[in-house]
Length: 157
Image (tube, rainbow, N blue to C red):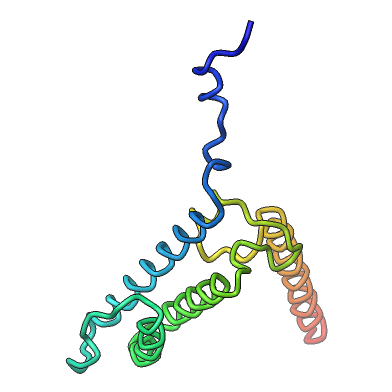
C-alpha cells in the first residue's frame, strides 16, 4: 500500500521549503523595516525639514539612506546607535553573501533564530557557549573583587 498524499503533505518541514533567496529577501525586508522604524523614531525628534523627508529603498537609495543615517544618528541614543550599526552590518553581510553564517564556527544560523533575531551573529550553540564563558568570567571577576575587599579590610586591622 502506498502513502497517501495527505500524510506526505503533513510530513513537510516548512523551514526547509523556503528557498535560500527567499530567506535572504525576507531578512533584508526585516532589517530595512527595523532600520526605517529606528530612523523614524529619531526623525520624530526635532530635525531640519530637509532631513525629515521620506527615504527611498533601492541601490541608489541605499547610499543616500546611509548618508541620512549618519545625520540622524546624532539624535539617537547610544543604544539606538549600536542597534543601527548592527543593522547596517547585517545589511552589508547580505550584500556580501555572508548573512546567516555564524561568526564563530562558520555554520549556518537557523532560519527560526534569524526570524526572531535578525541581528544574530552566532548560531544557538556558539551563543550559548559565549554566554556561559561570559558568566564564568563575571563570576571569577566578582570573586577577585571580594578577595581584594577582604584583603583591604584585614590590612586596616
